[in-house]
Image (tube, rainbow, N blue to C red; front, side, top):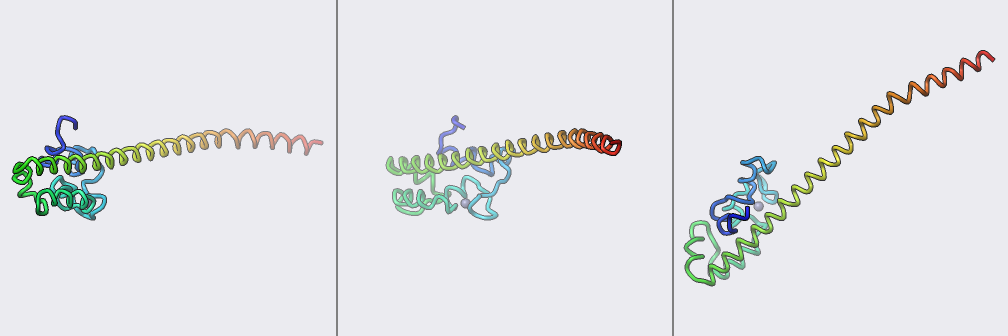
Length: 150
Ligand SMILES: [Zn+2]
């Protein structure tokens, strides 16, 4: 991921976007977790997703109009101020998405560990259940037998 700059990720869609990650089975779903039934593509994230309204507003101020996919490259290459704003925008968005991706993976790992623990506990319970009743029963049986004899 480090080989691509954040602006390149926004422009090409190759990077931390669920559409891309899902294509390579690195994410369970391609859909944005905040906007229902919308594929989380780079274009969607940068220009439409409601999670990045604040970042987009800052960029709009620098661009002097709302940023759009069609004019993004033209805008960011027009002045050094706009270039810097685009760079900051891309870095902020990609950093946020990477953090979300990391949290998602950590959560998945935690769920897997919990599942493994539950399976181990079930296995242990099954093993002790097959052992316990027999020893218990045979002891009880012997006690009953010795009592009935007495
Ligand atoms: Zn969204």
